[in-house]
Amino acid sequence: MDIREKHILAHEIENSILDAIKNLTQHQEPDYIAALTTGFVKSLPGILNKRIKGMNFQVGGCFIHQKPLAKFIKAPYNKLKSPEIGDLLIVYKQIKNNEVMFNALLMQAKKNNDPWGMTSIPANDHQLTLYTKWPMFKYQRAGMLNGQQRSVNPKTCTPGAQYLLIEENNLPNYVKFYTAPSSQIIQASRCFACCLVDFVEFHTGKPFVEKKRGRIDDWSQMIWDLISISANSVFKRRKAGYDNVNRYQGDLLKCFIQNNNDIPFDGEEGLSIIYIEGQLNDDNDIVRRERE
Image (tube, rainbow, N blue to C red; front, side, top):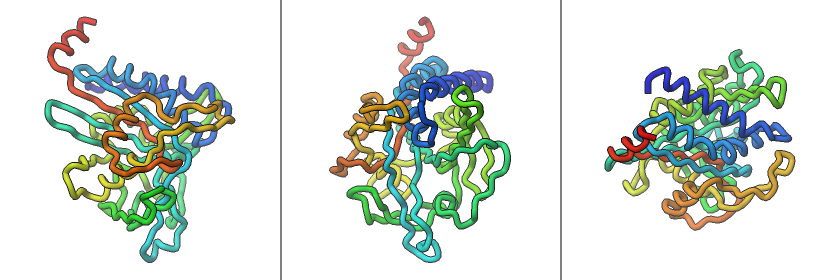
C-alpha cells in the first residue's frame, strides 16, 4: 500500500475501535481489551478486505482477564515481582502461494493521558524488565504450563513487545490508543491503528515460526504457549456492559487453536488475543472483487 492508502485504512480502523468502546460503562484497561477482542474484531475483516487489494482476511478474537505470569528464576531478577506476560497478543498468519508466515505482537496496556510526553518507569520495574531484558523465566498461573522455563532472545527490547497507551479525554467521546516501544521512558510513537497496518505488513511485531519445524526458538514457543492456553469459555464483566458473552468472537480463532493445540487444557488461564489471517487471492478472486 502507498502512504495515502495506509492513512485511509488506519483512519477506518481507528473509527471502528471508537465504535467498539463507545458503549462501555466502565473504563479500565481490561474493559478496553475486551472491547478490542470482541466488538472491534467484528468489523476489522471488512475494513481489511475493502482496503487491501488482492488479499482475503479473516479475524477472530478472545478475551481472557486472568493472565499468565513470568517468574524470573535467576539473580538478580528473581527478587522482582512476577510480571504479566501481557494484556493482549496480536497474531497474524499470512498465506501467499505455498508460503506461510507468522507475526506476533505482545502488548501491555497502560492508561496515559499524556502519551506524547515522557513518562518515566523505574529501572527495576518488573514488566519493563521482562520486555527489555527477557530474563529466563518459568510460567505461573498458566495451567499445565506452570513451571516450564523459557529464555527468549535477544535479551533486549524488540518491536514484538510494546506498550498500548490509552488516552482518555472527555469520556466517553474521546479515547485514543497509541503504541510505545518498551523503554524506561514511555512515549507514544504512533497510533494503534497505524501500528496494526504496519503489523500486517511485517513492519512491526516479531515473526515466529510454525511448531511443525520441530525444535523452535523460545520466542516462537512462547507465542504458541500463549495461543494454546487460551480458554474457550465465557467471560462475565458486568460493569463493562458484558454479561455471559462468548469468550470467542468468530469461529476462526477457535478453529485455529483447536488445530494447533497439542496441550490438553481447559481453564481460565490464558491471554486475550486478536488473530488475523490473510490469504492471497487467486487471479479470479482479484478480478471479481475489483468488479464489485
